[in-house]
Amino acid sequence: MLAKFKKWYYPPRPFESGRLYPLLGIRFFKKYLPTSGDLVSRFRGIKRVKIAESGGRRAALVNLEKQAWRWEYRHLISAVLLQTWAFVGGT
Image 1 (cartoon, rainbow, N blue to C red):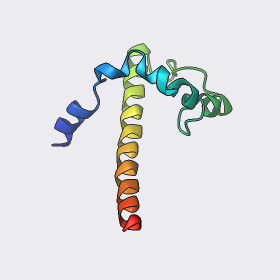
Image 2: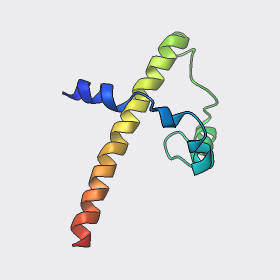
Image 3: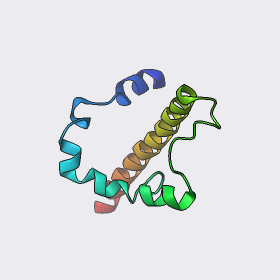
Image 4: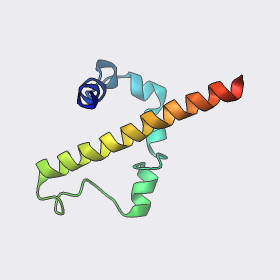
């Protein structure tokens, strides 16, 4: 069931490429993301995807994809918890 959910949840949606994200200011907020934002990456000394440690470009992209899945999973759990907290706290 989780694999089926991942297949549905993770592929890029049509609205994710195009003009919507820049209009929403996503490029601005990307600087301040706590996990991979520009400022955090610069502070941690990360300049690009680490290819040398991973064994090549394909392996680096696979590792990056897995890491992105973990972050998205955290976002999903956080969203559910925050919505629950807002619902319980608001009643």
